[in-house]
Image (tube, rainbow, N blue to C red; front, side, top):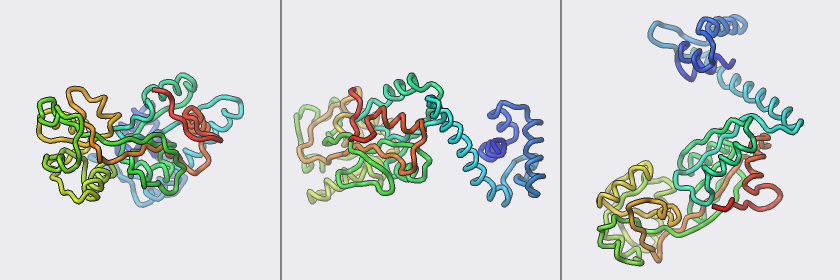
Length: 293
C-alpha cells in the first residue's frame, strides 16, 4: 500500500521508487501483485503519464488510513515501553511570535529523536480545517479576539495590538503614534481579501467608519516587507512580529486592531508524539504556557 500511495502522489513509478528507496522493477511488481489480489487495476499506465483509475481513487483513502493506523499502532507500542516515536505534523501562520517555534521544535527533536517532524504553513482558516480533519496534530493561529475555532481544542497564547509598518524615509516614520484616521490616507500593502490576517485590519477601519485603499495584495510577509521598504505602501502587522523586520519602522496605532495568537489541537486522542509536543508547550491538565523566548 505504501508503494501505491507513492505512485499516486508522484504520478510516476520512477519517482515513487526513488522515494521508497527501491528499484522500480520491485515496486512495479508489488503494485501489480496488489492489483491482482484486488481484482482491479489501480493505475492507468501510458508512456507519458500514470494516473489513478476509478478503483484506485476508491482504494487510496482506505490505504492511507490503514498505513496511518499501522504507524499509530507501532508508536503506541513504543510509547508503552517508554519510547516516543512516530510523526508530528505542526502548522503555523508565518507571523507566529507567542512561541519561538524553531527553538521549540529543536528542543522537541533533541528530546524525541525518533519522531519525524513536519511543519506546514498556511492561513489560520486553513490550519483550523487541517487540524479538524486530523491532517495536523497542532497549529498556531493569529486571529481576531472574537474568533473561536470550532471542532478543535484551543488555548490563547498571547494578544497584542497591530502597528503601522513604514519605510524609514516615510513621513510617518518620525511619529511615535498615529490613529486609523491618519492611516486611511495611505496606500496599503495587505494580505488577500477575506483572509483572517486581512480581516483584522478591515474590521478595525470599518468599525471606525473609515475606508482605506489596499493597493497591493500579497500572499505572505516575504513580499509585503520589501514592498513597504520600497515605499509602495504601509502595512499593519502584529507589533511583536514587526519588531523583527529589518530596515522598517514601526509606529504605534492607538486604535489599531488586536490580534490573538491561539494554539489549537485535534479533539481526537493525540498520538504519543503529539502528546509529547503538547506537554512541551504546557498543555495537559492546566492552561497553555508558552516557552520563554
